Length: 267
Image 1: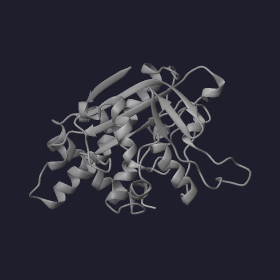
Image 2 (image 1 turned 90 degrees about the vertical axis):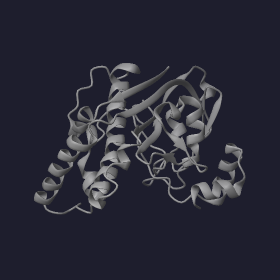
Image 3 (image 1 turned 30 degrees about the vertical axis):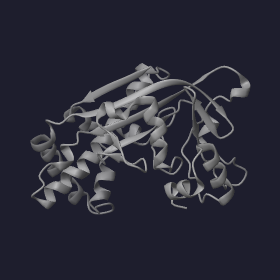
């Protein structure tokens, strides 16, 4: 199944993780008073300048199987990368494919693919005022992330429905106390932005106004994409340095020239 959702800014404000907003303004670790003052300004700016713009999400839920370090979805191979060193002594070296049922066991598992984006006009608001323009950009980024949080909650409770009775506070949501994970493209376990070309074949990011650059980066910048896993033991992890052997194997599985993959991964 594939679903497109549209959110009003007011509905997403409770889902904003303000700690990342403060970090963007170099206020992490500063006084609570300074943070609260900026938050009040931001909330007023949202209401006065950005409330008329929509924030959109698209997601798909698909049958999936893993094979080695690959995830197969709708006949499309999604090559994943594996940790080179365990997070702690005795722990396994993880790969996102580990959280999907192996093809060798038979039967199908399920995976989610998603993207969210703030309306492109939102990030262009107030171009003549540097402060207000930065406010618009940083808030658009937070709204795209908030839409991903809200969408993921709806998927767990209703569309996928593997956690129908989940009741979490916003603090618990931001602390990721829910079952499953939502690794985003460009983050430590999924660092290759060009994987967006494969995800786009599954969910059509253009349906919510996202355009991909030649390297797979999303425009508008205030966009998020990634995968949804429901496995109870799924967790986030850092890949660490990608060595030459894995880089060559990954290029082979991506069916791309090694030099191009090296550029995509910046290694």
